[in-house]
Image: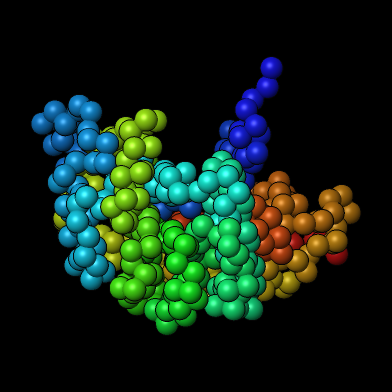
Length: 396
């Protein structure tokens, strides 16, 4: 008796594993600062919670349409038009149980066995696992810290083969915080125009956590828009991770395929969460800007403190709420008891000895680095960086 081959191909989520280990230590009374999970520490804004309460009182408690309520889809269409200058119809929108399902829906709807999907590395841990679940082949393109973790047009061109079906591009990026500019996206687009079989899966979930101005989307280029699937949702911008509402905006044939798939294994997302998400998109956006400003302040704080730690190489992220320092100078070092062989060892050392939870870069396809989420208080950031600096000074 054994599990299916498709399940055996998958690896457990490293981010969730580190968070679980952090919780276990906390349960034992250890004072752990958790910087392993990408989750805003803010509460969901009050006007969004009030909309959810009204939805309960008004009995929005029955099965919702598979692609989402028309009111929410209309709100998303308006958001894309007003904020991004993009024209979509409600029939081109599909709401799902979080942006994670939106990505997986798209991959499962498009990828056949043997198809190749280009994934720039560092990458979010779930991308390659989703491709493997679809029996596709992940093709990794490495972007190092020296190039600000962004791939070049030349690298993209070199990775494309007749089997290439899709490119997954995340900007602002998890895990690096790097942001592709309009000019950089256009250069990648020019490569893709020579290969009309390739679909771009554009993960824009961190769109509003951006420190360099207007968000740039691959869908803004008219000559490739009909090959772009936008992934977005309410979790990061509105501190609504637990509400589980994401969406795709895509060509209608892709939306229909994802709708068919979703209709067979989850149906429509939570009815009350949809009404809350509708309020998020149609209400005041001041809460989004307030949180963005807080994240930017924290980013400046953690970058400054990380640069004061000998042996870490640090870039300055332009979005999201992650820092992805290079830590390979510590590989091979020991405190006399523990030896650091790789970034997973490095992250575990920080957790077990320094009581700061981070995630090793191995899980993100960048084994020389590690990820810290600064979606926590200034006080936690200051204390965490003090602990990291102290414990790393023990390694010789």
